[in-house]
Length: 110
Image (cartoon, rainbow, N blue to C red):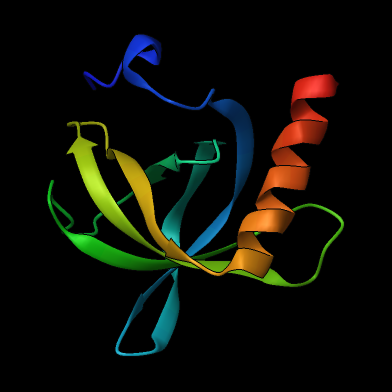
């Protein structure tokens, strides 16, 4: 993927967790996971899901030690043949963004 660290506004940090893909408010567990995350987006690795650059997708994923999910809409910025997707967060509630900020800040300090 051509999204290099020099073109990102936020540092990406390794984080692996399950991901759910949604359409019309119906979510299903995707065969894949979040690979890394930042305040602006994430990298996902998905298997056999026809998602292409430019698609807008609804996602849900969990943060550790928190049974509430983060729900957001993302724009697929790039893809590669391995199934990796670079996504940018488009819509995310203030409460979810705040939880994500706390999580990322804790990773940066660790």
